[in-house]
Length: 267
Image (cartoon, rainbow, N blue to C red; front, side):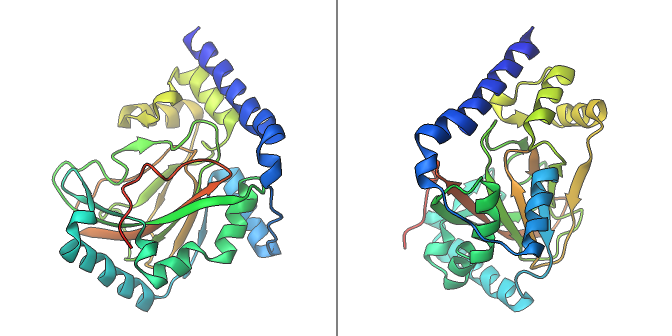
């Protein structure tokens, strides 16, 4: 009974966001995002899997330069750095202080791909999170464990590694296909999990993968590699076993409110 009630709630949310909300509000804010044939395949991959990868999006030199900017922030403007559990240094709005990061945030190709994925809604707000995560015993990883960013609404993001990332320094992980409403409904029915809480334990994720025949994708990739993904799907930054990880994440809000609750840096 509990699962069925939550399934009905999910369907009602879906109807609201995709139909009523669009009819009375977002249809006035639609944009025609033009993308190439190559980028259309990336768009379709995000639809299908919840993510897509673009190699060599940022050069090694650019990665090193942005790492220096992040370190300078952590050393000299530490009062503007948000520290989670002593290991996750976060700089919200790094695009305000860095021309390189600002160029990454406003990259026309990214905005067009993700705007189309967000059903051609107008981009109303965006910012870049600069991040430096450092190994600490029993750290839960970036994002503080498995989670989703929204139950129904599409939540496109762009994550780029600034260092080579392997299995030990906190690779991004995603449960393939969990961005789709139908898969969320099946997970609710088979596992009786409440997506409304937005958080999942390691055991719950293991059960989701097992009972729903899901694939877990771990992104061990080179510096400069870009990951486009829908935060609507189940994901996390895995715990660090050693060393550190530097990254940038673009948050995009297409005809939705959000972003104002983050502790943004000063310009």
